[in-house]
Amino acid sequence: MSQFYNPKCIYHIFSDFCLEEFDQVPVLIPNRTKNSHTICILAGNIGHPKNANYWDLLDQCNRYFDTTLVIMGEFECKGSTISYTSDFLTSEIEKKFRNIFFLNNEGCKLRDGTIAIGSPHWSSKSYFPSIGGFTSNVARSAERVSSNVIKEGLRLASINGTNDIENKPKLLFITSCPPVFSEKELFNWPKSIWIHGTNGLNGSKFVNKVQLLSNQFTFFGDKHRSFNPNFAFVL
Image 1 (cartoon, rainbow, N blue to C red):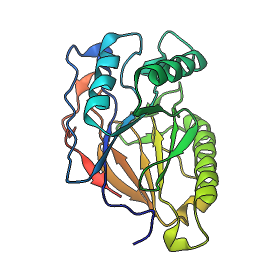
Image 2 (tube, helix red, strand yellow; image 1 turned 60 degrees about the horizontal axis):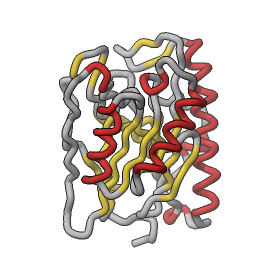
Image 3 (tube, rainbow, N blue to C red; image 1 turned 180 degrees about the horizontal axis):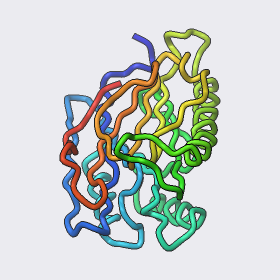
Image 4 (cartoon, helix red, strand yellow; image 1 turned 120 degrees about the vertical axis):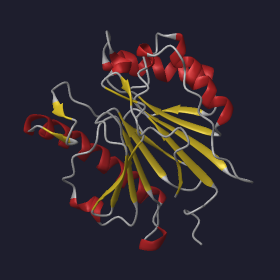
């Protein structure tokens, strides 16, 4: 077994809690096995960082999960700028928590060798969530972001990887909106997972070799009927 594929890391993904619209913070309990390392991924639109319940949820994740990765979505930036929100979250999370990491167009290497890259990745223009796709204008905007995220992931993986195809690290992309695929190079990577929220489509599907995963708590102000508080997977 290669050094990159450690089955003891258990990943949990959540997004779109939109806590400013709900009074109660959801309870997130990790699926844990002996000697496992639990990783929580909050894929944007969690809530507004000026509200106490945003930090209540992060505090819960800090207590129950070994590692938590956070990105921001559109909800986090309401009434502010992207740069201010990013700087604020970076500073506050670093001060408050040891095991929570805010990713804004950057990556990190996880315990099992997986390369995780996080980016907000959304557009202010409308899209069609019912079919999970974008209008042509938004597609062009999202494609540029997808391309940048993919390039950063491939760069980090090349630094941390090997020339052996089978032993290359897995890539884990985390964005608020679904990706628009235009980079053929990504399809040749042995294993890539893209975690997203926003579009109202929960579950798993494949685009060539890339697996898309989503577990959204809300959709247009209502609790998503397919949200799974125990959703977890192993890489």
